[in-house]
Length: 350
Image (cartoon, rainbow, N blue to C red; front, side, top):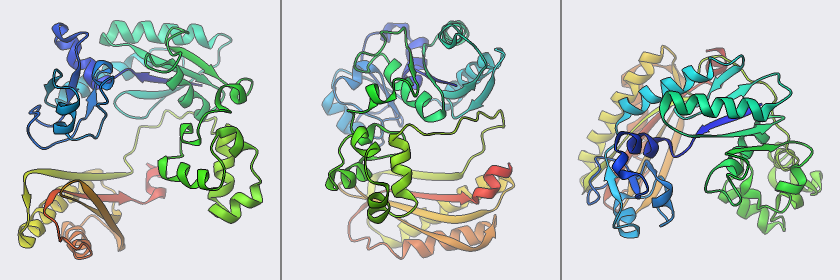
């Protein structure tokens, strides 16, 4: 199983269109105005060296890297390059499972996965002008994590020509001493909880008492955390089309909103746009979530399960406005977002 990931995808597309930017720090986000509100969509490796990261406010990115070139998001251009990327993968005798614009799992029967990875990298480079990193694993988890070691900026990365193999044989040696947050599926919050329990590394988590983990983190999550630390993962790659699990819309305001009625109007507008996305999917939503980011940068979310699955704009908007009432709104609002989620069985069936 291979995990193929285009390196610094959005930034790389922009640099390919503007060769004079090669080697310079590039930040893509919002309208490209570093003084406006908005967040970083992606940053080139040169910009990341200054601490610029995806999701960071553009103004913060500008302070960290004043010499960076800021560019607006151009979704149609990225979508076109992404199409060439996935079309190239499908030319190989493999099963391709697309995960997003810039990454996919590839299932193959081969005695030389490194040779297959090299062939894929060369073909993608020729078709898109972009480089990709390839992780080789005996399941999805290991293949996904292996890609991180193949990235040019990974410690020791690139030594295998932007390809790295991570399997049962070298799992403990490679991952054992790394923090639990290095595992795909364990975020910073969970890692801190594990650390509070005296579990700081992948190796310690793998050796932890299953009963103790179940008692502390629950009968489902506790054992699952340990399974991740042991490198367990699915071994299936499916060629079924990628199906969205949710649709969301959000807006960052150039000037804070303080009037509650105006905030309500903005939430209703976002909910209406989300409802249109849901209707286009021809699948009903089962849950609605509202996100509010207040000054200076405090983000809170509230969600609720709908009484019945629906695509009705009125019901989705009603739920969003009901959720808005759960927020204190005692600070000026800089961002609002609405998300509608589909039922898990609908995602699988699609």
